[in-house]
Image 1 (cartoon, rainbow, N blue to C red):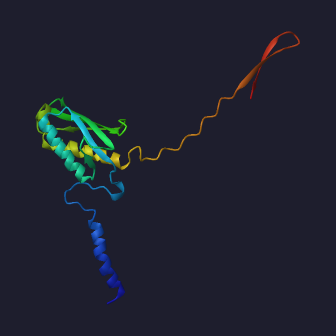
Image 2: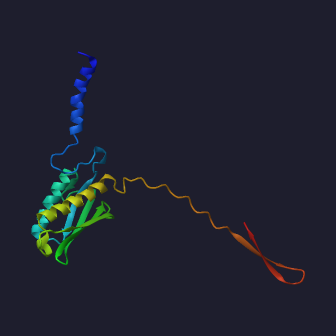
Image 3: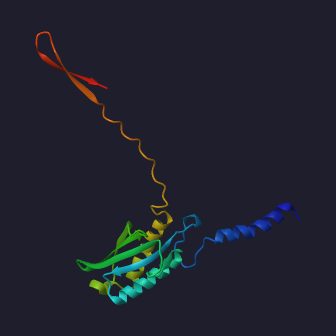
Length: 192
């Protein structure tokens, strides 16, 4: 047996394992290890939804957060970021669109980003009746995609751009008055 065959026999399973490590049988996109979201998130509230849709959205958010490895904690618990959201149905002609906005706050209660989007319902229902499981899943999926992107590089982890040099101070000038031999006064300006 040659050393080449031994090396291939040892490397093939390792290479196969590494190539399959990125596969996901759920069909969800997976983020690379370098881009794993950091920090904990608590959903303070999501206003506007009726109770049945609210409960389904919360379950969908939990599922999507788990898929993306986002650490969601109870709103009573300590969290690096807190999310306050709002959702509203908008009837546009014969279609209903569910618009949503999430404001993300840091531990100092300062808003650090706003996420949002719209999901059109395909079920010919109007108002909140259009917010079926499919629409709520799309809202949760898109919202968690945006949140995960933010958590990979939030403002407190993004290096600040280099400071610009201070603009030069305006040149000071001195105005002097002189009297000519004919008695006229002339103003002279000298830059310093």
